[in-house]
Image (cartoon, rainbow, N blue to C red):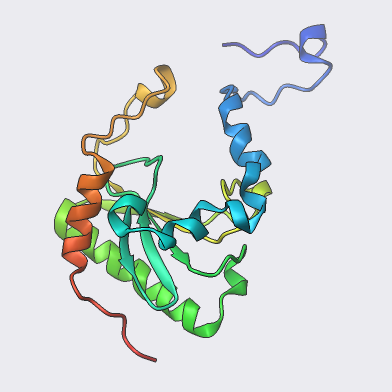
Length: 185
């Protein structure tokens, strides 16, 4: 790809910034937030109503839970969420904030124990404008990383290689959680 001259009619008069563009129209469902603006349609609110295996829930705490990401970046990609349908980290009450943090730390320890990653990405996109796929329900991503785990598939073939079924990963992580409970405050 090459940048078009600023005066090109195909560039609509915009100034070039030297950046290449990757066209990803499929991401509009995340930007628009689809049906998840309504709490009745929120998969994060519906999941805990079902069985753990079916809903891919790894761990249930008092105020928060851990669930497998349906569209993982890597094996072991999970989400930490409060049960309450709230959009922002600042909406967590004190007990939720403590459990949210404890669950994040313990989940990382569990993933290290069973998957031996060399690093992690932790992230929360607060609001649709920040890229939250389901902006109405706060969730934090925990993505394990290994040296050499990135490849060309997602870019060239629009395919992510995930070597283990989500249900299998959920089972291994859930077993590693055992009967763990966060510290009381």
